[in-house]
Length: 373
Image (cartoon, rainbow, N blue to C red; front, side, top):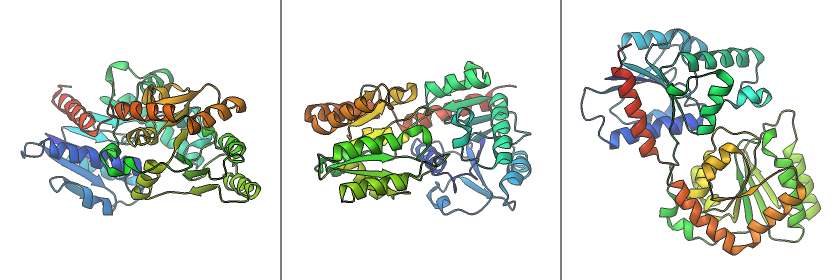
């Protein structure tokens, strides 16, 4: 079977890069590349250092077309035709306008439909163009892979996609924290948040309540890992500066990003992980936090509850300052609760496996590729 994978987004989207590389490595470990009957073509529009992480068995195709739109709509369809694919796989939402008839796409979420101002497609034309193409891709694809039941239902509700062609395959975490010695490091006095800072994720509210608690906890800190992408801007750094000034110490630290090793240290040493959001299609940081045995404070949200299960302490309303204060203070001071959430989290995280996701993805590809259309 000849399988083609659109890889041109991996240089700009780390989640897509992790997804593609994890699938390829799992397929190799499962022995799917042992026969020349299976050929994997990976299509790029430029050279990328991440190619070195790909199994040597895959065939790398680098197009001369550097422009993303020209690559997607002209160069990629030409390559698909030339390589006589049995199935084409797009790991990121989009397909060429004249797409190969046996196509599979992965859609992590469609938050850009409900929250257009928070879309990474900030240019109006680009947003309208890609919003149209993504919906068209979902309707024309032979199968859609999505990581949560919530996103599956959103695809059905907002775009009218048939339930029959949507497959829910949870993604995995690349690090098994509980198998490392770092899990046994003493927890430090800091709260952790990881993720792009969007308006729907309540960072100003969290910072305000952290300040109230930190006034009575002189060693408590808050580490934030993520770019401020709030729109309209909430000026998160200005809020942080005011809190640090009033506490007369650097209680809150924000990083745009952190290395994998730094994140491993943060997850393994933090006292609690907090993630509040109005809307998510998936949430990898919560899986990473559970894998690390880190107690989680989240709000009641269909997607977050689907991922964390009983491994989080939930808030009914993030805008309720009294409730947020009580729940955050409790997760910081209740030793028994933290131990209970740690044990539940490690068990819950085992449901999110790259190996299982890769196996089921391969099965879907075989089914679509051999289907007579």
